[in-house]
Length: 154
Image 1 (spheres, rainbow, N blue to C red):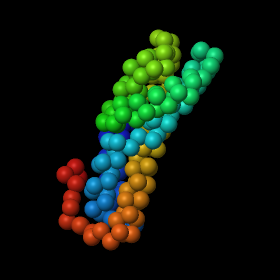
Image 2 (cartoon, rainbow, N blue to C red):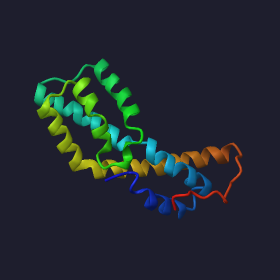
Image 3 (cartoon, one colour):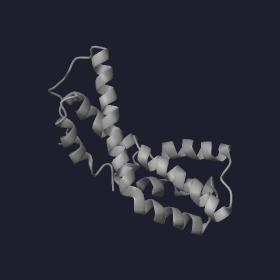
């Protein structure tokens, strides 16, 4: 349930790919594992909107959600090292921007914990997809393959 905890497995699997360049894998997978959080961020925004509608009877305004999404993108960087790190990092946003009370915050934590492994799967799959895009960009622009670059992680 942590994108950073899956890093060794993600690197091992990506290195077995015949499509991905090894230097792009060594660079891209660790980088994206710490900054790319599509699964966590998408589910958190969806759950915040759902909980708001269920508990408070209305969705937050578009301006409030845009502010929440922008701040969540900043707050979530580095959060994949901890299971549920994205939601824990954003508790201040949930209570301060979305104005959730104790019941809304508790429900958010419980629901997020139940599905966190699915968000991690989305994050790891997205890391591979972004590395594939990075490989395509490098090949399109004639960037030399540096096979001798190894990640210090594995």
